[in-house]
Image: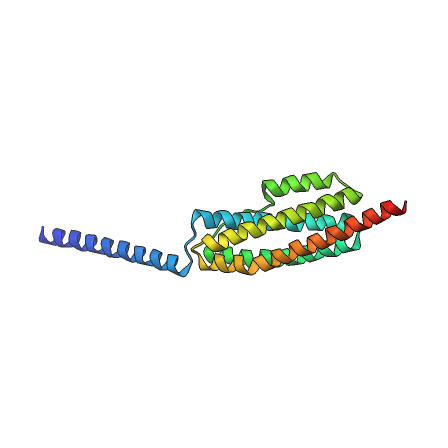
Length: 189
């Protein structure tokens, strides 16, 4: 019987020790920025779907647009968002986070709307969507940058925000150029 009590006590001590070690490891994970909470997971999922939608939309624009500036903008967007996607995949792998595969509901709605348009109407609506989407992205990335406890997610957001800001500035410039050309063409008719 003495052996049984000793064995039970030893098992209990080991269990408490293991539990304590697990808590300590979890605390270290939070401090080092490796723990992934629901808000961080939601942000990563948003970033993955939004990024994939950008790539798909810009591939369509590159094929359908007549305006050379818009075509060049679309190509740059594809290249930049493929790079962002690569960094995001590496981050998700490091954090053992699952990312959705696809464009998400919002991206699908935008794709559906734009697929039915052509010519100047397509170009104008595409550029409006680019300005709105990238502006929304800057807001979401900035909010995540300030609120996350995960240092790696903060770093990803911090590194991506300037790219998104550049995209908004370029989108506005291309949109203005297209508008000026359209207005100029209407005046000469």
